[in-house]
Image (cartoon, rainbow, N blue to C red):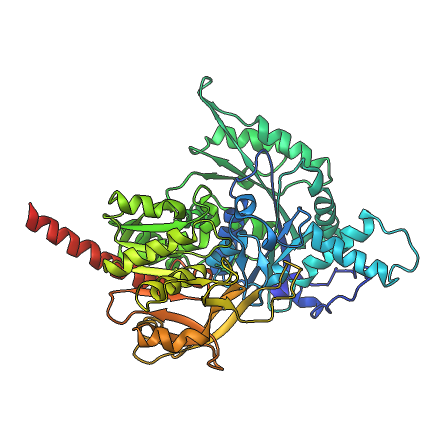
Length: 571
Ligand code: GLN
């Protein structure tokens, strides 16, 4: 039976609305909902568990979308320091969202929108706006029902006709004060959507206690007690552990937490994240969820994912890539860049050895010859002046030594300034982000941002097209004349300097369709010295690496090989 027929009679009611809500699809197309919560500790990999499940359901032929509910007050993570939050993931429609959306997109291979991320702040903002318009008709506005109704509307918003299953991850950990309205909303959702249309997954930790030499289930039991006290009985418990759990332990968790034994799923540590869907499938996660949701177990076709994991395992040829960053202590700040490099490595059979280089240290390291074993460089995006000169020094080192180098957003700024100073003779070139009255502002504000005081959502954000120059490296790389990439920046290449830099040998190899803005630059007589104003890292997939990362790594491998050959000649 197909999913739509399985659904039978519609049971969804209407959420009382203060603000207008998009209309629902026809009743027999209503999607099923899976809610994922976490307990015991944060950073358990809820996002990866949810993403893996999404992929498994997709491989069963279901249409899946995903969403993250975040309990913090910021409207979105756009204004947060990367050390607070990790990377800000940008969607095509310009949403600045949680980095888990990157996992979702990479696993389910669907482009999501800003609707796939809602924070407490954005929910209160909508409620307050409705309150100011008098839409609550004089009533006292309260967490229950008004905030919880708004949360439910956010869940409805992604429950569109084209989707069979919505997976909603609730950020934070049960027991946090901030998470309570979300738990209440998802608790109510089962009644709203119908018992068989909702499945609750709770992800917990089963720690190994060294001195006792045992894996302990008590934290899981406590966490389940906590979520039950909010009225939610998990249908499935995903236990994270270092080593596999024994059948006895699964049995114990099943009886203590009142879930089916086959619904105790063990996600033990795997070598790489892309193995996770296969592990969770072996544990039965997708089939248990579909049983809970009364969806007939459509056959699963794992071929594509098994092939991917084989490719990952075969990627063993070491290639050393330096990442010149400002936030290198927190690797999540560059999550999509790192994943994109890995994807490129899978493609070439290469294992990326990442060298995390603090941008401020570059000049010192170069002085000591410490970057000589690098095969390729990435200069990623960033904000603020700290480390900018180091990024410029890295760009110069790459240019002068024929080291493949890819610049992303601020990376393009650094590479442009470097070229302007060292090749085009504009000694005092700079970006006005760092030197407002620069004599040669080769990077400048191109949009009217001078009056902007609101820092949220005011950058050039989301997908923009670029037209590529035929025969250029980027054109060859993409294999298409027009490409779309996601942006997140205020400053860009100043067209007033374009002809001067081009005369000195820089190629502006991609421009906006109106030809006003420079989107890509490169050097024709360098193996790979390419930069883009955009963030291509948001569009790379494990089985479809982004062309620029693919070609950076390809070029870095050639560099590594030629180094090996010359080393061999010396010895
Ligand atoms: N800080 C730069 C700008 O705002 C670059 C931003 C980025 O790298 N994402 O333009």
